[in-house]
Length: 245
Image 1 (cartoon, rainbow, N blue to C red):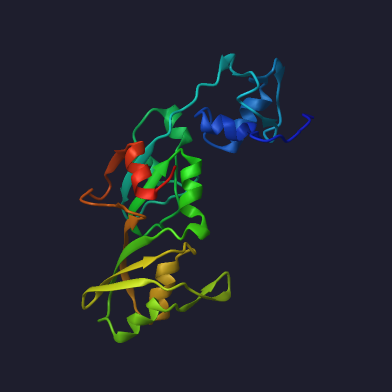
Image 2: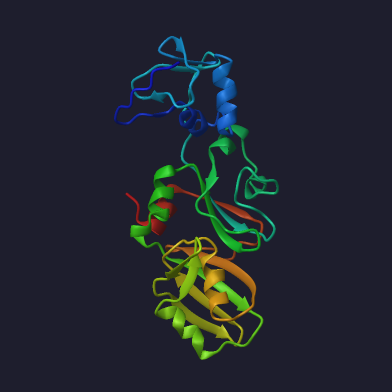
């Protein structure tokens, strides 16, 4: 067995292999390690949980040093019918066409369910993902909601918080921003990320949801990007949209 000793700035070897684009899943890492193709400081490592500091140790994979992958950012207008889980078929990663090594490092930030369309940010920047998903940062997410019925005054309840069921327990949402577009459409901006939250909020008011589309995260908007299309963003655009250092 490999001895695992944790030090500051270290990470698990399977995570390092993934961030370098050398594997797609943890099982890929297990196979690579089992075959003895990962050498650290001259010794083969077999445990995917082995802690390693790439700044201090010599790491060879298939007798080649690991090459860092630059941070990449893609804005996708997700179509209906696609999943955000990389483990499922017909997932959003199928819409990105790039080098396989780079593609292995990419992941979507947050999730949109299969029937929800709109803005999805795909990257290999774990720090950015953490900043966006961290609840204390209260990152705004704006959606366009279309319902079957005509809107009533009860829509204003969303602005003070409404009780929904989360993990089979009652949960009162934080105040949302709501703007009517027409008699059956409105925009809603939330700062939380509970699973299927907007759908649950709409259902709690007694409405039948017809479509849900995310159009903004932070100050990053979907703009005129067509459904199913992807736009690569540069680091300056990302820093401007999310105020990251």
